[in-house]
Every structure is written in C-alpha cells, then in structure tokens.
Image (tube, rainbow, N blue to C red; front, side, top):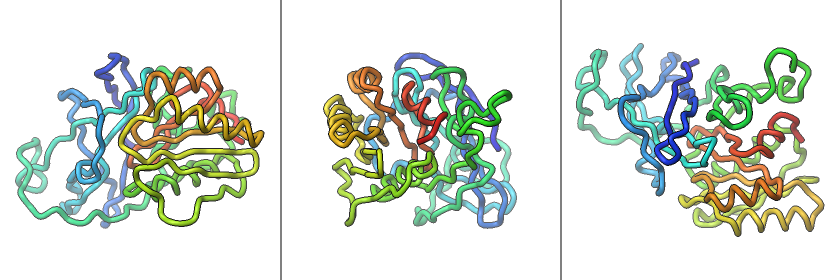
Length: 278
C-alpha cells in the first residue's frame, strides 16, 4: 500500500492526508501514479473523461497503462483537487521525470481493484481534519467490535461512465449494510442525478461535472422524509458551501467519489453512517 502524503487544499489551505490507490499491472506488479508533490494541486471545476486518465509505466515490466488521475476532496471545504503526476520519462526505467513520450492514447482497460488498497476512511484524523482513503472509521484499538471493523474492505469499481458512478454508489450502500438496493432501469443520463432506493433508504447519485447544490440536497431530504427513510447523497464533483451547510443542518450524509470508485465522507453525518452502518 502506498504511504499517505499531505496535500494542501488551494481553496482553504487545509492540509489533507491522501493515500494514492495501488493498481495491479497486467504482469501482477503494483502500479502507483508518481505524485508530483512539488507542484500545486489544481481545483477541479470541470470534469471531462479525456482528462481524467494519466499514463503510468510499470516499474517491473515497463508496460504503460492508463489509470485514473489522482484526485482528493478536501475534508474541510469540499473542494475537489487534482494532484499533479510526474510525466512518463523518455526511456523505461529512467530515474527522473522528463517529457512524456508522444504515443497514441490506448483505450483504458478496467483494472481490478487491489484488495490491499485503500478503503473508506483510512488516513482520516478525528472528525474531518484529513482526507479519507483507507480502513473504516473507528476501526482502531478499542473499536474492534464496531460495525466498521467487522466489515470487510470495500472493493471499489473504477468509474468511467455515469453508470459506473451509480453502480459504485449502490455497491457502497450494500457494503454499509443496506439491503436490496435497487438501481433504475435504463442507462443513466450523464447530466442528471439518479435515485437509488432500498428499505429505509433514499439515495441520490450525481455523476455530473458541477458541484451538487442546495436544492439537490433539500430534494433528497424531502424524498427521505416522505418515505420515512435515511437520505444519502453521492457526487463526483463535490458540493457547494450552501449544500454542505444545509446537509449538516438536516443530517444528510454527503459522500464524494473519485474515479477510483472510492466514496469519501465529507461531513459528520457521513462519518457517522460510515462508522455505524445501516
């Protein structure tokens, strides 16, 4: 597993801990995107699928592959930032970063998630002082019998399409303990949020490239109130400040998903849900 590194949010200057995901190369060796920690992280205000992949060379066999670009959501202000990565060197195995080698862009393949990779909540300090990326909240000494400690590690699904985002949210809710999570029929529209339902649960997944706003949070709360169910929200691009404040007032758990498919809690209700489960 890669070590946690500090990433400073350019919006609020809060330092978050981030653990870069470890992916398996086709040869079986672990592949980790080489973070360029000397460069400033860039706020992600608009997401395009063509810009969310980074070329990484396997150090064992020299094979080049396309993997999700490292991203992290600030646990303080909710800003999603993209972490710079060293470009490929001209020759396989070179020791220092150089200019990327011009080459045709291969079609991304679906990597299998590393079972020893990060799970929800790893690297978080108490509350929301650090970004999440590993084992469940409260799974430390003295909490061995907590619901989070009893759950196996969550196995994420790499997000490449809107449908992947919806499927990942459904898998995560089942991992939290919600039973019979139902996805809507048909292909999700990339520009629209999608509802997920289960007994005692109303969830909404926003696969768009804009932060979820106040109205979206209030709508999922009203849907949950009408159904006497828990309301949960998942977003790819984070949340506006107004949405975060309102969600805290209403007790709505908010999660942000990066392209590795690992949902991250961004407020206290989400931390509580992660720790206790359904």
